[in-house]
Image (cartoon, rainbow, N blue to C red; front, side, top):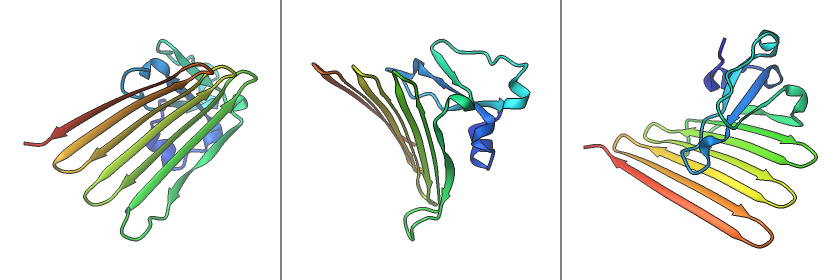
Length: 161
């Protein structure tokens, strides 16, 4: 049984899932978080790992900050959903966050992945904004080492005809 991000947002307990993050997104569009299923169901199931994917079991996650349905601020949004996931090993620290905001006219999604090691810090972010007439997507990749700093940005705009 595959559990979608929508099911996760609807109230699935975060500690009951495996999370797979597809790392092929470097240089391409950010892959969405893939929630594969209940731990109990997955004990006999090996998910098909795409190349460069990482799977975390709940015991490896330091914290999954609960999915929040945030009460919208007046005039700004009708719904807002936040997902934050953090994982740490002795060598790497990863933070994944996703914020979705909807109004009657606009839908915005911001996804961010931050990875830190002793030598490198990488931040990948994707912002998508949709209205009835336009769709704007901005991808950014930042990499820092003690000697270099690299930033790549890509913007894509579509206008309905």
